[in-house]
Amino acid sequence: MTHFSPENAAASTAKWLQTIIGSRMETEHLTQAIALASVCAALNPKSCDLLIQPAFWQAQNLRNFDFSASNIVNSLMAATFLQKIKGDLVTGASNYITLLNEVVPQSPTNANEAYVRTTLQNNTSDQIETEMVLDIDLRHLRSGNNTKLKNVLDIIETHTRFGTLVISEQGPIGALLEGSAMQALSKYDLPLAFRALRACAYLGRAGSFVCDSGLDFIGLCQNANGVFGDFDTSVAKMRRDTSEGQPELSLYLSISLQALWTMAELSEVSGRPFRLTSNMT
Image (cartoon, helix red, strand yellow):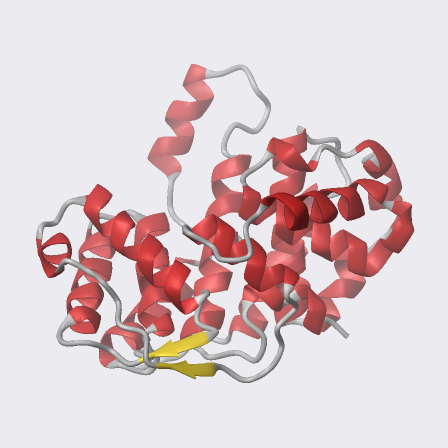
């Protein structure tokens, strides 16, 4: 198999980000762009030279930035990245992080809470062994139902703390999960497929034939301009249905972030995304 390098992929995406990142964006798009920039910079520190430019941060009026405008993962990625590189210049980042630390319970009950707690703990140590047993109904992995699959993924993400807790695989969960990931890929449901592949990594299956095949698939999804995915038909429909200048921007930002995150997990790159910004040099 040909394995694609997350570092090279991140460098290519960073070059694309540089072409859009200085222009005015809606707050949600900007949050996605900064979150993606944080992953690029962490996977390929040299890309920081392309992305961290005072003109960009000043042009976007970050002092009044609304971090609650996007989903919690994007917002926290963006906030921790900005706090790392700009410090007190972006007070909204510190305020948002403080707020999450106050309102999100110490014992997470879902994946979003687990992501926040794992990020804020700034855990850069080795994975912790645990004897925890995953309470998963295998019928949900055999059903082909996306809602049930997402519920399983939520359980895995929450209880493994996005791979920081090593849980011994029970029975056929891993194999069934790999099957679900391949099914999602066959339907070109990239967000679901990438999430399922990351969950496989959290269960210790990175390096398996299926995960390596998934890694190669993701690498092949990257376009020459650095973004991931082939959505020409969807983009054409978006442009017909809206008068916005770049209706596809959110799609490509989201898919590209998910792709690089998944490549990092499957390649077992040092420093997983919830702690990537803390590992920047």
